[in-house]
Each structure stands twice: as C-alpha cells, then as structure tokens.
Length: 232
Image (cartoon, rainbow, N blue to C red; front, side):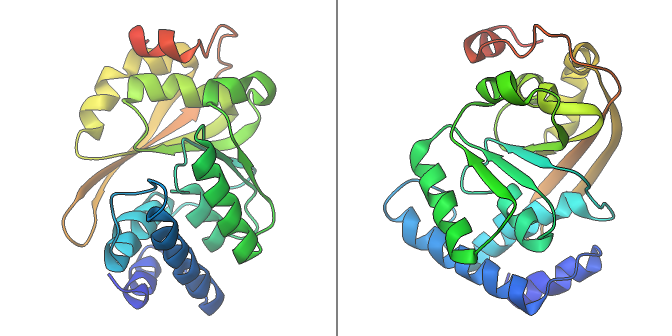
C-alpha cells in the first residue's frame, strides 16, 4: 500500500488525511525503518507493508467513530495505534504506555521530529501505570499485546466509567471475546460492538469495543505474574 492508497482507504472509512498528516506518516515510516536496524521495533520492514499493516490497521477501528477525552495505548511498542491516532487526530490527547525503554526513546524521537503536542510517553507497565492513573482515561486501546482475558485486566482499570475499551485483534478475536466474558463482567465492561474487517491483502481483523458500565474492583489489576498465571 502506498501513502496515496492509504489516503484513499482512509477516506472510505471517513478519515481525511491532510498533506501535513501524509508527510508526518512518511517521516514516521522512515524513522521506523532507520531505528529498526538498531533495535527490534517491528518484523515488518518494507515501506508498503508498514503503511498497510501498521498505519492502515491502526486506523480501521476508528471507522465511523470519533474519540473524545484522553486516550491510553497500552503496550504501544513502536506507536501502534496510539501514535498514528495522534497524527490523524492532532487534537486528541494521547498517552503511550510502553515498558521497554529503547522503544520509549524511539517514540520520543518521533514525537519530537513531528513536533506533536499533547502526547506523553510512559516507560512503565500498565499495572504500574494504574497505581497513579486509575480510571483516568476516556478510551483505552491495545494491539497485539496479550490474550484478551489477560489484556482486559491491564487495560480496563485505566478506563473511566462509561469509557470505551478498544481491543484490536486478529482472526481469533471472536473466540477470545467468548473466553473473556467472565473477565469483562468482573472488571465492569460489556461488549458494545464486534467489528470484523480486513486489510487489502486479506489479513483478517476483529476489533472489539467494550463500554465500561461500572467501576473496576480495587483489587485489580493484580501484578502481571498473577494475571498471566491465573487470568480472570
């Protein structure tokens, strides 16, 4: 996918990319390729694949949706989807949560070069972040971080009541949603929408949208070792 094809595909889902946004995404792509030679940021290295499998994929959950309030991206890695969302919606306040220091250094470099404002990088785990930022965010998202039963406990405690949790999943998303029903009930979320889509090459995506209907019990999140060993 070329950057022009990304613009066309984005228009089809109601997201308009300006010339400035296109230039910022081009710079982001170049920095990703440059830094990826030094540190492990992504297994996807070719420009056309980065544009489709990272940029386009990041935008698919926002088809027909307009986010309001502050958004947290848990385990953002090289900035997907949070950094892409910030470029495309510059007024959206974004928090990027990433435990790996080298990746955080990369994220700060991109933010600096693109002169983005209203975006913060937190070099910490989600369960650590929840100690100071519990139920603070209007929307929380995560992409390719963990199985949904585990992911929910990392993300939902950060979410305000009535906020939106967007879990970006692959072809097993529906099965993960079924397996995570108990976890979501305990944490105070209900499934609002399950949207199936695909990239132009046919890669299947299932994006899950959960509405937080009650406060998360104070004992969650537990430490990561317990979350992983005994998922809800």
